[in-house]
Image (cartoon, rainbow, N blue to C red; front, side, top):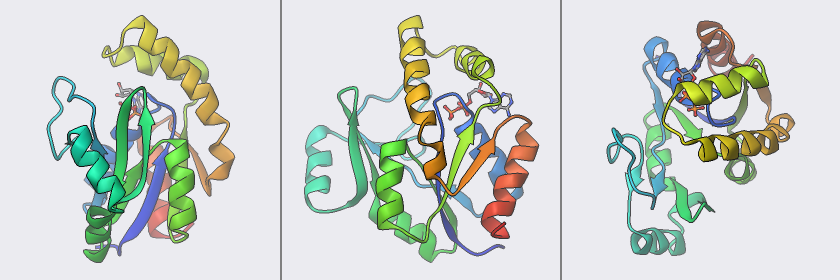
Length: 185
Ligand code: ADP
């Protein structure tokens, strides 16, 4: 088993972050996503503790006030955060702990954890990003428009990350990320 590492993974919605993480786990069993906390309602098919830890706004505020989060933010009226304890427990256990976070959270995480390896996932093209977002069939036209606008803003942050990896061919993308994190190249 490879040794532990902290990985910050960002990229616009629909670029393939979840898909890449799942595929990476297949070839690197100690890869684990740090499950974020959120106050938003679970979507169909999501379960507590796997996709997110779904908590009330009161619970969230109490945790934020007592310093339990590496970073937290509000998006469209919902709160999201990275739990410090869970993250540290995974690192202590020699896991490759992935923070799948937005660009703002990522910048904060980079400042607080200089040991983290930061990776920005890029789509092969705008057309392909839009195709993937539409292909998921989970979003309304309005949400798709917002995601595409957000994507443009997020992509401007790509060069703040140590590594930029294009998710074109999934296996190649995963191999490149694995090489970066495990061999430090
Ligand atoms: P994110 O987690 O970044 O929002 P997802 O992992 O949900 O993105 O992927 C969005 C869509 O793109 C999914 O339908 C997924 O199957 C598809 N996808 C992901 N990676 C690739 C790839 N390398 N080639 C083609 N389709 C992909």
